[in-house]
Image (cartoon, helix red, strand yellow):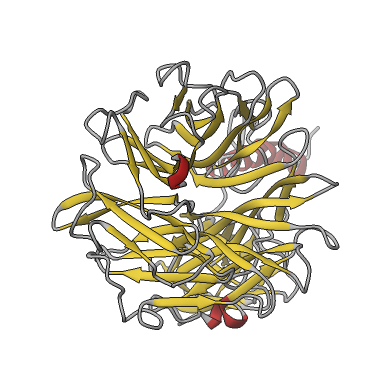
Amino acid sequence: MPTTHSRFAAWLRPVLVLLTLALLADHGVGAGATAVAAPKPRFSVSLDRSHAITQPGGQVTLTVTVQREAGFNEGVQIFVEGLPAGATAAALRVESGSNTGTLMLQAAADAPHSLPTGAAVRGKGGGVTSAALPLTFTLRGAAGDVDTSFGGARLLAPGGLTDDYVRGVAVQADGKLVVAGFGVFSTATGTDFMLVRYLRDGGLDSRFGKGGKVSTAFGNAGRSDEAQAVAVQPDGKILVAGSSDQGATGYDFALARYLPDGMLDTGFGRDGRVTTSFGNGTDKAYALLLLPDGRIVVGGDSHQGANGSDFALARYNPDGSLDASFGNGGKVLTAIGSDSSRETIYALAQQTVAGVARVVAVGGEGDFIAAAYRADGTLDGGFGKAGIVRGLFGSVTGAARGVVVTEDNELILAGHRDHDFAVVRLLPDGRLDTGFGTAGRVVAAISASNWDEATALVRQFDGRLLLGGWVYTGNSSSADTVLLRLNADGSRDEGFGPGGVRITPVAAGNRTDAGRALALQPDERVPAMRVLQAGEASGSGDLDILLMRHWL
């Protein structure tokens, strides 16, 4: 017979089970129930900016704000995840009663440069962690430093079978880079146009041509085709200008247009290629200008017998046909002097004066020369003497190799004078701007005892000038690449390096390397502007394609 105690236990058992089930159900656990949701943080974290940048051995601070819900008064620990190698975040705790703190990010002195790196900032308090707050962090170099995050500092690779010669570089809207020049890709075609495309941060673009490279022959039975300049159209098509040996007419201007994948644009010229002869002498193109209306101007020189080589210009319609409204059937020849010297266009720019656009061609051989042309190809008499400026340095060896137009429509020309870097600034009417350098001129000897020449010029948005080129080292004829930065007034920018100069040896030992072209590359991820320098360097015996990126 059951006792009173056993009867009570039997009654209590189902009651306890019901109470347990009720408690479990109240916490979301039971048959068919989901896992318990993590408690939400009762605070949020924000930063005063979403990008941070510093140099090796440096530090940068950000202001962190903690917003607490009513009734939550605990301290919040701030931590950062995903920083690049060599970077750390100092400990930060925003104590109870405070809403802000200073987060310090530090970089070791030997930290490598980094690409813009996506990090995450979080807060932890009351046993819970806040959602990730994105932060882009970059470890940059000092102004002038080679950017070691770009392809491991220097991209040096063969293009063709033997020596490669680089002459131009351009930046696409997506940040990719195209390098133009010439080399031998087949014994059957000889020297051909060479076009190589790189990814934004280095490395060949495998989606372009064959493994990132394209070579183009102009159907001239193995004679030479030499690319000298490159430009990217707004639609992504790529223009390359240079010269092609056409046999009976000698070297002629040559122009090719490529689709974004590297294929020739068959809607341009004849199967993507155009050649233009000024006569039976040698015609060579070195400069390329894409006009806002899609027309194309190519400049160089044409040998005119006893008169030597004269300035030569051709203007093309967007389809590659010659523009008959320019000069004589699309072509213009300008004899600067009456002797047999060589007068060559190396760079082109469009300048607007009193609301009227004109093309300015610069070059020389012996001294700087500039000529301004109206839309119909005639010389603009409002510039210099009958449209021409010459004798700027009174030198016997020299030429302008680059030109830029300022916001107030002044012209800046850069090149070399007697084998030293040289720059002039001209007013819109062609007179020297005496507020620049010494009476409008700057001469910078990179080497006190040997040759150096500027081959390219770009202008930063703040007005500072970058000149790229080469310098012979010591008493040798082995060159190294050079960058020189000048302030807007022509003085040397000492913050860029000693005397505003950065010399970068690339090839080992006494082998040579030389800078040939420059292009500015914006990067909204940092944000920052950097400069690309392209040229060639002696690799394993032959000259190879060289590409570097420098911090500004």
